[in-house]
Length: 105
Image 1 (tube, rainbow, N blue to C red):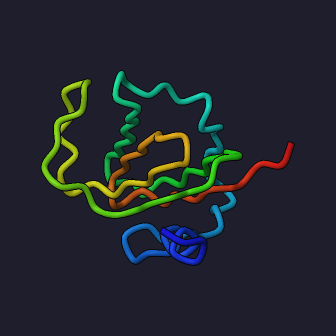
Image 2 (image 1 turned 60 degrees about the vertical axis):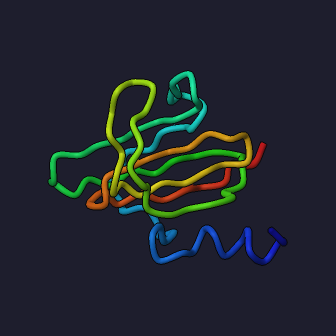
């Protein structure tokens, strides 16, 4: 995958990067604990919450999950996902408004 494809991965139809709403909850990716396979699942109850993820890591891939059961026993089929450069895979509900801010240290 070349640099332009990597940049385009963060802008795919499955996971568009948007500015976080003013009332969005902000979390550091490093504060979220992945399972043994490096997977994190964020589900919502349909109230369309906003979430802003802060990380120094580049986004390498995005899409919609095929049938897969996480180490924690969650079926992520149909959830959107992002894969970061350290291998962390973040799955999230399609109704969740989510954005990524790249932290500068």
